[in-house]
Length: 518
Image 1 (tube, rainbow, N blue to C red):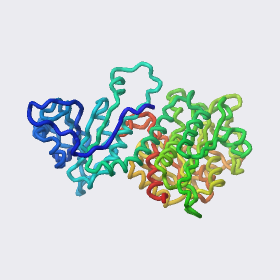
Image 2 (spheres, helix red, strand yellow):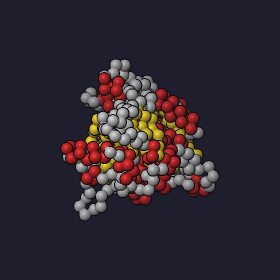
Image 3 (cartoon, rainbow, N blue to C red):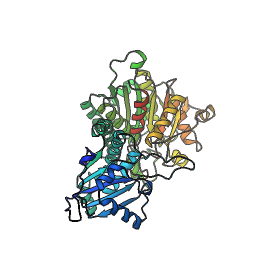
Image 4 (cartoon, helix red, strand yellow):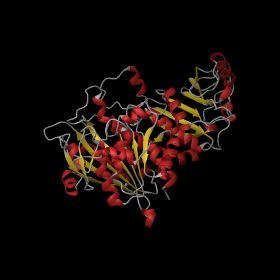
């Protein structure tokens, strides 16, 4: 995907101050400044505005602009400035009762700015606030991340474009003017890696299933080798020898061969003992889910190209970790299958033997993701002995009923890991909500014919799916994230206008950065 935005950092003194006087001629471009409650601006911003500060005050009074978050004041041909356009973006959030004013979410602020300026070729953003942290380096880097995330679009297969699309094709060159450009550039290296990882995840989810079938997905994952990631692709012959028969049963109705991809980033080479043990992330990669013999209704079945959003997140995360040279040993494992109806497809009533040796009665072939994950979970915990495992899957529609699209469902056997994921979700905006697990739910998986059945019935569908997965992790600290409501077709936001959201890359990168590096 081509980049539609180029972002750099400059010093505040180079922000393009205007020639003085009414007769000043415009040199083109757009100037963006930030304002808090009641039009509060930093001293540096007012100096850059010069005589135009009075113009802003008058325009704000006329437009009843108060500097609140989400609002903007747009002034064309501003007198006294060397720009064609002046835009004032509000940053003030309405504080909770008896609470101090909240600091802006700088990632979302960057996205909001991009949403306002999209299509403008040359933009200078004066990134300075009246009560902002010294130098604003980290904050400016966060804003850069938001700008890049909002700029993403997926139009690879459009041959005819509207006027709006043509305007959006203009490559925006954005200069973020900050007090300490060097600090912002240092902080931006991490955010660049994150933006690339999220972009990869979004693009994988957005790709059509005739393009991104399991082998093609595996080839995309192999591109991580350029960053030093070790990538191993296991085909059906190897998987059969190893015994991943639950996973293979899901794909046996498809013409496309099932795959498992293992990605290894060894960023803590000097570590020894327990510190050298890897952290592990696993993703459900059902490249298309027809439901199999238990076929889905036709309405919106096309969305099931996104049933591999968990695997997409894992690939994007591994890219981010490798790109920023994270000091951690990490495993990324994805099970790639296509679930199709065919004479060879598995049937309700079949009994399959998993890699763990446990037998599973198939109740509904549309509950296929847990069969993919159970074998991959067992393989990773048994072979690599990780510190923890986190799996991501668009696993159940039931989680949408419970949590909608605001939170992903979190299920875990470990309070510490669960707490760290919850905090990382609060910090990044990729929020999770912990759901219960317990022996009474587990009883719903008892089978008359096998060690277990893989569906527990109508009630507590997300919980019984997680209970099923828990049977394949032994005592390894583990968390399952059900991202059916957040990984695809989630509501548009300041930082995402894409159908595929890339959800989870920022969350898990934060988890690693805060607790497992060094």
